Length: 153
Image 1 (cartoon, helix red, strand yellow):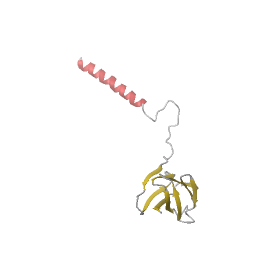
Image 2 (tube, one colour):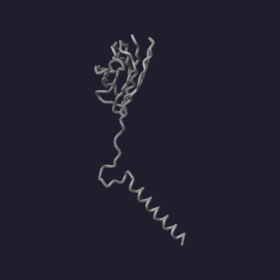
Image 3 (cartoon, one colour):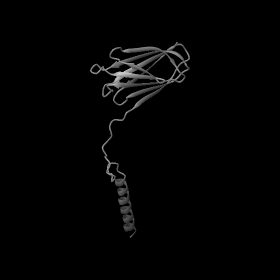
Image 4 (cartoon, one colour):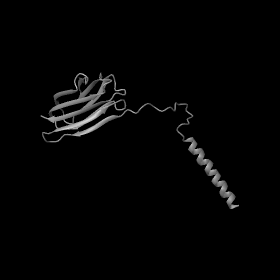
């Protein structure tokens, strides 16, 4: 008799667990919403750059691609004049991209196909923010490797 009660309790628990697991399945939905997977996840590369107190230079690199469509560099710097050297490497099949560089709200346009380097001397505010995106055409499958060399003047 004890075995029969134990077997019945076990059967009820098994059915209850199976029912719970089936109800929590993400592929089954009663709301009628589309369960198709979403497109690729877009990543924003955010790097915090700590500037040295010396007169040396600092180099940072990142990549724009179809999955990473924006680069954000957060500087930990004192306000002052800086020498900024951007360099880019584009894919040969699709070198026509135009990059937009935003430095503390000031916009610069750069076509790496015309010049692999973009050099400027610029006053950076304390804790400067730089954002880089590809304007036209966007980086749909055509990656751009970008490096920045920073030197305090």
